[in-house]
Image (cartoon, rainbow, N blue to C red; front, top):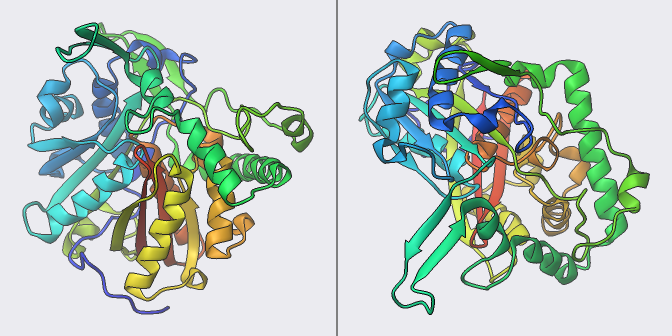
Length: 398
């Protein structure tokens, strides 16, 4: 394996100290009825318990979400209390890049010696997203109202365009063929259901019970509800919403959480069920591309990162991304001259959904699990975020 210098040589992600809820589509499960911060904290404790990790061993908590939730002012402290350990921490937010940024920040916290064992916990609930009323003296109406999820997805204040428009723009720019997009999407669904059939997804996603404020069961989240098998023929029959974008070739809003731990090399044995496995953060970069070309940004970020650290696509054992549009993967394949069939084994957000905050965290967890199954190697994880941002990171599993 090529030796690449790590930016955080004193930080490790202990194998197996991770887990995700399933991501039910918005309004399809009991998650639509709860405080997602409370659910996330309680679920992290449950997941860590199943992994034989005591949350009392953690000394810091980094949380990430993008949609306002009740008591968000209290930040990581209230979520830590729900987890069962009164530790300090903070909240971060960068649209759909949140999940990866939180992991990088956890590694940085350990690298500088500020913490010995950091919990990373990301979550979001798109169901019944709040509506905000903003005094705006400079506006004609003096008061502006915004539905947090749908108004932001439908309107970029920098361009006055919807996110969907960015996918159409990029498809035209790179002369992407609709037939390829439908083939790619059908293949991504096949990968996901192969991951279900093999038991891979069940290694990552944990069935979780949802409780009311009185502690009464509201239901159990046992699958990525809303995901159904889809054929190439049915995709071909869908009408274009924009160039190469249909209702079937983009992801869907969802609810969920995902968590993992970061610690020092010396303390991996205190947490991991397989302490001989090492997972190390190598490097990260971000770019911002031209207005309303978001699906292009991840490929440009990967280009920049690989040039900076002296790697090529041939060096990676696992390649996985946040792909809200199938166009993302088609463009990446063109820019990087990389076969899109070789990436996103066992599933991707295009299929299992898009709760924003935890999306890239689950992508990372699936990527690490796959790399361990394959005997180790370099892992490339990347994605896009609102504002035409691309983010990319490299990890080493050995």
